[in-house]
Length: 320
Image (cartoon, rainbow, N blue to C red; front, side):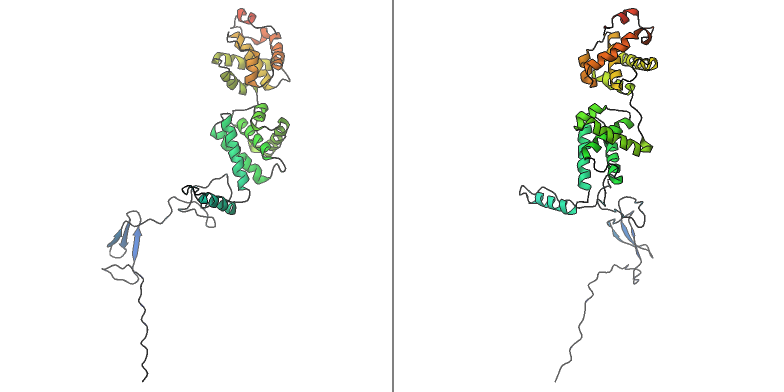
């Protein structure tokens, strides 16, 4: 005689939290993250404490269609492209070298197109700005300018070295710490003409951040500081520069040459004489250029020097 098979029984293994007082199905339980409690919304019975807050750790103002970086990754870097929510494999594994290879392979696979060039350019900008003692603000502005050039394809075909040099030059001009073309050439090893071409193209493209022409007064403070000259010499050199422009006897001279010649004259007026060699090293112009500019200043010394300075000081000036 055939026996009938008994029906299979399935055990419900789901764990369901229910209020022992209300016993409602489905339960009406709320999570109060401010206090870390699980509370029955009907009777107020506390069912659990020390719950984990799974919400985002900061407020996000992203649009509905945008990405919400809740609880994932660090703050986004505006200088880079892409989502920037990558996982990075550590290179430390006790010395076996496997983790280092995994890190390189993972970097090649997940690299965003063009990001490697941006990162290398940012490293070069930071290193160059640190080499000549520029503040971090100048470095950040130069990076922003470089990224804008890359995004808008403003200098197609130009090498990155020339673009970096022009961006640093413009950033220095914008924030009142100008550097001469020769200083940027020495720093970046890029020819002066190439920097000039890139600077002219970017200056025309960046109409809202167009930089002004560099003047001798802008360079005076740094040059006098590097020559260890007191403030009175610096003020006198600035005043000499302004009067020389009014007279017009140095028309056509570069701002660096005018600054060097005025510093040379002011240092002798206040008995803090500096040689043309010392000034040449600091200012980056030849001794012959300084002497030629000083010759024009010496010819108009009676008009340039203020009445408060005695004739004795004027006679102490070296003849060109």
